[in-house]
Amino acid sequence: MKTSIFQRIKRAFVREPQLHPVDHQMAKRWIKQRLVVVFPELRNNPAALERAYRSLGLEPRPGQEEGDAETVFEMNIPDGR
Image 1 (cartoon, rainbow, N blue to C red):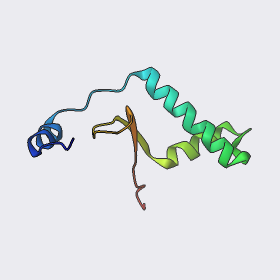
Image 2 (image 1 turned 60 degrees about the vertical axis):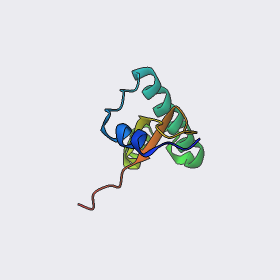
Image 3 (image 1 turned 90 degrees about the vertical axis):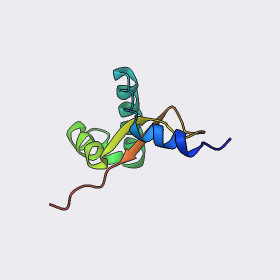
């Protein structure tokens, strides 16, 4: 079922609920595990793994659209400074 324009406007002005800290930590751990699989050189280097995770600029937020997962990650573009 498609959402009406009023539902979309309402969602735009409603503040997003905060993610539970446990959900945030589980997501962070899963992303780091995937980084280690893709980049094996990060396996024994926790400082480099943390830098790689932070360089992704991922922000977890609850899914809002119909059919979205419960948690969705948005990638932020790093500043070119």
